[in-house]
Figure (tube, rainbow, N blue to C red):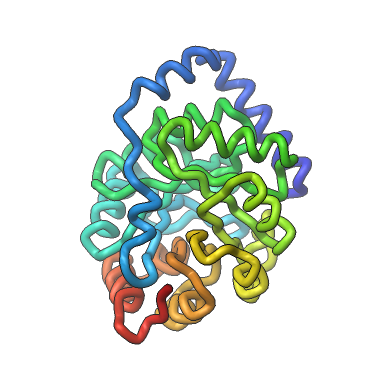
Length: 269
């Protein structure tokens, strides 16, 4: 899907939802929810953390077996927590991943870990909406946002007690994220349409980040080898979705990756 198509689809979806629940109401609801969990603190735990992702479908590959109900989502979330994940991510994007905010709400209710909302966030309405459904960390796709909008959305996320994740795909994106005040940067190895994977993107971006910036690697982790490689390049955590969900035993796969991230041989800051 082209960038303009992604933005247009998101705005159309937001407009439909806002017609049902007005912005003033969703804003009030978001400020009346329980406090957000400390996602940044979870990233500061020793070693290279695993952010285990729940999603119903992979674009171009179809539905993921076993992720077909709220019960399955809650069960996976509990397994991820018990297996040593530092955070849980949930795809809420409906068109390419068949996700929903309700999926995230169910996953968060099943665990004590912070929750990363995985979606294309470009409108303030979505931020308040995500908080209502339990988001503790919210991503901003830097390449889709003008600088003023990026700064405004980042401030809004933090004003609700959540952690903003500036998601970048180039050193130029990273420079803009830092200028906007981002302290957590996620480097996505996938192009925004999901067609091309390039793990070297992480190594291209990280040298330009200040030492205190928290760094998350997204994309292409299937085994401890990729986790070690990202950690050696400076990752504080990796997001793993398909690699876990399509394994024979998602809980065992999560345990293996989490153990690798805590191993004395695993590079860390």
